[in-house]
Amino acid sequence: MSFWKSFSENVGMFFEGAFDVKNRSTGHIKNEADETMDQFMILCFGDYLGIDLPTTYYALELLPYLAEDIEDWQSRMLFKKSIWEEKAGKLDMDP
Image (cartoon, rainbow, N blue to C red; front, top):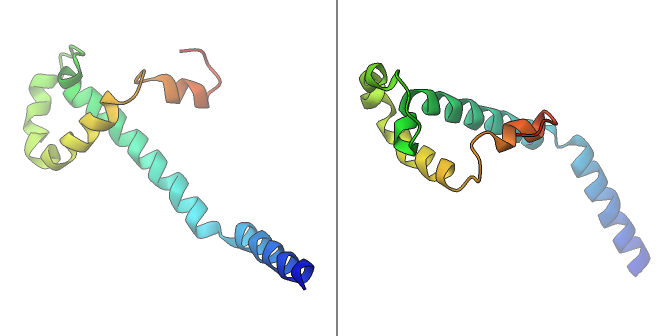
C-alpha cells in the first residue's frame, strides 16, 4: 500500500511540474521586469547609491511617478554584493 501511495504522489508531482507552465513563466517575467526596473532606477537615481550620474538632475522630474518604487529598489540594491554581478553571471561573464 505504501508503494502505491508514494508512486501516485511521485506521478502527481511529475505532472504538476511538467504542466505548470503558468507559475514558471510568470516567475521569469517578474524577474526580468524587476531587473529592467532596477537598471532604469540606477540610470535615473544612481546618486542614492553613490554613483555620480549627470542624468540625475533631469531624472528628478520623474520622482513623483517613481516615489513609491524607490524604497523597495534601494533596499534590493543595498543587499546585493555587486550591482552588475547577477547580470554578468547570467551571461557567463566575469564582473
